Image (cartoon, rainbow, N blue to C red; front, side, top):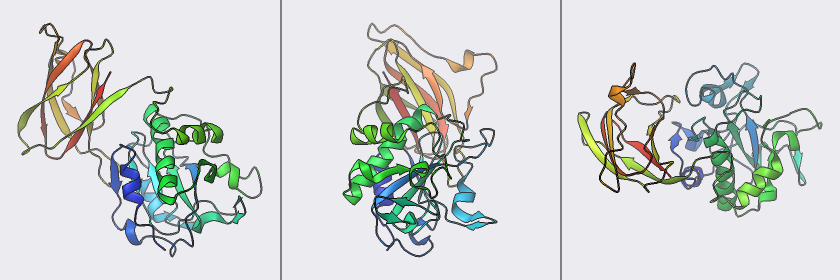
Amino acid sequence: MYVPWLVDAARSTGYPVVEVPGWQTRGHGGMRVVEGVVGHHTATADSAPGDYPSLDIVTRGRADLAGPLCNLGLGRSGTVYVVAAGCAYHAGASRWLGFLDVNDEFLGIEAESAGNGGWTPAQLDAYPKLVAALLRYMNRGVERYAGHKDVCVPVGRKIDPVGIDTAWLRERAANPTATAPQTGVEILERVTVTPPDAGEHVVRVYLAGSAGGAIVIRPRLGGDGFARPMWVSNVFAWGSDRAGVGHNPAQIPGHDPKLTSHRRYDLPGAVWADVRYSAAEPFEIDLVG
């Protein structure tokens, strides 16, 4: 069978989702059953550009192994890439909870990481939320998640995902609404902005007035893993006393108004802000408290 609910599960995490064209019918045949999730890292170098530079290889495969090599990818920004609804070659020789060679029984997540234990705050938040969502859709408990290092045969053949402890991820998946302590950021709300056209416009957002107040502007990512460019010329913000606490990026020496990845603007004490932007496609603004 091909799993039709992958996109719905991914969207329920609250993170952006990229549907890789053809995912609905991509696979080495269908899944025999859907009983759990295996976590991986891609081992692509940190220097590789883009949010998910491994997208082509996990979709098309490599010289020694045909793709797809996972069902879902996890980008550096926390964006989820839906790659294949059918069987993916992600686990190889494997055994877990009585299941053997789990490719056609467990979904595989390939998260972007060089394999040195480095993860972005967004990934540490999104990874367990994605696992929780998938297990919820298949009506299975957190014991049905395991890392590649847990399921591989023989034991010790694989080490991924390095830096993601299986017990920690299961604990986080059991409580996916909690804020991951590693992030140091509390996202109060994620706002989607749909521009009326590609010209310059202003959108107003409202914040909590906290000392750690900020906004994070996130251009949308395409299927190639790269952000669609947009421009932010100014951000004007005000506190509850109507005094300006504005962040005027145009006054920063060397500031480039063009965004090709997410960018944070600190707005301590702000209760609302006007963002002047130009964008041809929808984008998100995270409100941080």
